[in-house]
Length: 450
Image (cartoon, rainbow, N blue to C red; front, side, top):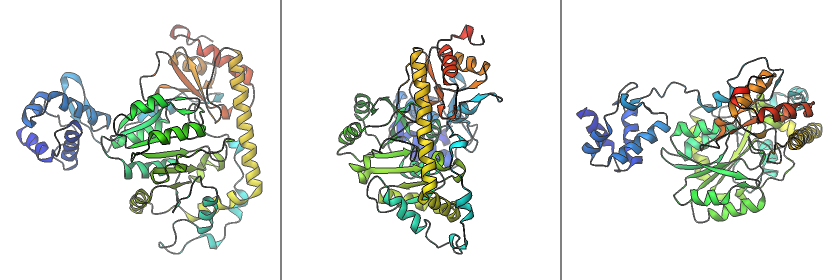
């Protein structure tokens, strides 16, 4: 015990909760603490390090949120094996029974609305391949095509393996343990999992019909915020798209700060709304990610990103330690798709079809007294009386939806929501709305009633 406390004290640079959490993390990294070890009692640590018990308790809470330790009442606080996967919120969204006649739980695009890849694949030639590890990581023609449609002027655009690859590069390069990070509430579960794995303090800010709610954002900014991560349009799960007026107000609220804004634009190509990027006002403090998974195909696993110069260098250096670059064959496929008029027409047709499907279900729900917010996207965020009961009720009718709780950063309401991927519903909107409306009013006792 004495040796352990001495080791933590040696690594303690600042006598704060964040500093103590960093010291314990360093002890774990250095092998002084291993999985299964118990941390000393809070009062013992406080006495040894001459800090308050509240400081120690807060440090343990930071470590628990980061997944480094587990606190279990009288059994104490135990170091976890950080090499083991933790399941996370995204796994909660995906955990459901198989065999739905209509699975609207996934958030994925309709395969029937994706453009054909046959022409792009047939056009591949030897010129698209590389014979050297030292070739440009991004095809010059693809970089030029992307730059022509980028929301603000940037020095460099990188191509990576999908939006989550881009977000992970940015998050692990820019953020540190204990940083305060603002996210939308509700938020995309894999993003929450990613941020929690880094050990940041998540600050959920509610959404209204224009984007991040200004009052809640202003309150969050009373303390330093390292980053804000947001979806500028067709936010998943709510379908909210940020207006230019709100983006300008958010930029004004951040004026004079070094807060990084990370924009995850997964609706590119499928959104009828013009993109409003905070890079217009904060180009030196904005990272922008554009994904092509929903518009051109999930299995392409392609996204493009830009970031402030120093962050971009750090992210690309980190990437050199792993995959290095994204397949130039896939880049050539994407370039062909982006410059092919027939593919463009197909993507526009998909955009219009998704919009029509969303309107059909939202209007049908509204006629039944279920009001759904947002304006676009593949998903609708449906308020329900009892979340679990609603999910079970719909499952009993062969309809899969995602529970809302994994999307929430804060405590949420006493009732709940479900996310419905309306983009996968091709017809029968009146019947679907009726089933959802009944489920929205269902309580636990009648959840299994058919």
